[in-house]
Image 1 (tube, protein in one colour):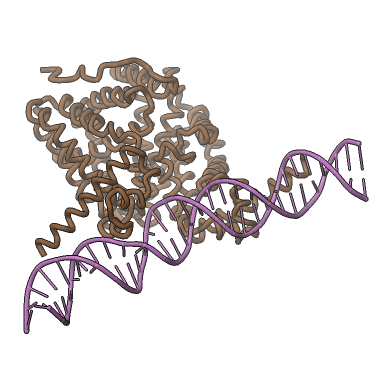
Image 2 (cartoon, protein in one colour):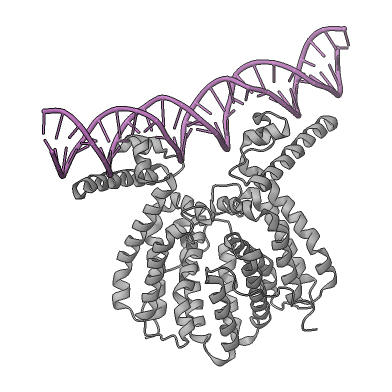
Length: 240
Length: 240
DNA sequence: TCCTCTAGTTGAACGCGTTCAAAACGAGCG
DNA sequence: CGCTCGTTTTGAACGCGTTCAACTAGAGGA
């Protein structure tokens, strides 16, 4: 099995390599499965033996992209102790490393919004990768000198930062400004706000807000069926 | 021209009607253009004479959906003066009226994230509708007794609320909880926060934050090429 | 009445992603 | 060497969205 598997792994890697190169060169839509197969020197059916669909090739790209991101983050995470600098460095690195794929990253998020797609970040197939990315943000927090007091918030923050990064990427995909300057400025600004929020939110005046918000998040993220059969009509001509 | 045009408009409407019905019944992906054409009693090519692509049928749906939303909002907007109740009513109405299309709404946002798609909310083809939706939120604000002091913020708020609604819809698409209870709870909670923010943000302690944020928004939304060649590295080991 | 010209309509044909029955390969065994 | 059985590979075929050259309908002018 070991020898056989090795051969298979080789073919698989070769097809993926060829596909990503073609994606970078011509974009996703203009790269056909036939072209990938031909360039890789295999039959179309063979590509489907290793990748369930054209979209699954992107899923593979997604994982490699995260690895590159981790690599690029390493120096900042090792040296820097300031939370703002850490978070900023990590997000900047994300955009920097993604830049060569700006053209074809579109598709990446196209299917990402489709609940039925395997690329959808909430799908089971993406769960493993999502976990890894969340871990990165956990490390951003853990390695900083800023301590998050509230344990519930501490637990929730990595997930929230993951969501934040998704938002930044979504913006970046639509960003046509020179060298995506707008995206970088958005990062500059929002990182400041977020770090300020993290340090302020646990202070007494904001406690009730934080508490109810954490409750909501807990409810929203519990995949298990319902949370509570809450009223949605309680609001109407309230504080008259 | 008038008579001829009438005939055309009739066919167009009939095709759209047929398509939307099939979408509701079988979902988007499982409804083929051939099936639409057959059900409408025309040739496939004829459908393409009126709608440039299958996706453009969704764009048409999008517009109709907004009309229904406006209709559903009317009573609340006419009677209610409390901002929180108005905003809550409008968002609840959006989900309520969209509910029959929950299954197929997925596709709606699938292509929405693709910059090249006509469905992308930032595309020129969507500009008219985006404008109309933004106007709705302008009315939500204008008709409430809450006055937004800062004129820049007042101008920006409808756009921000539009973005907010997009976020809610995105969540709703992925929401599989019974009767989408999670989405309604999310609305309940976030509306409260947003209204509180609107009233607090213009107070002295938050002024600098508001000002820089408004500057950023102005920059981000100016479609004209660049805004400023800002540094993105100013952050690093800052407040040591 | 017939001609003309535009709006409307047709359906075969194209290239795409994807499927699948069948073939080829290759390690282990007698 | 020949046989077996699971892994790997093949490519014709399917159904889809989309295109386009050709056709029809019908209003208006001569």
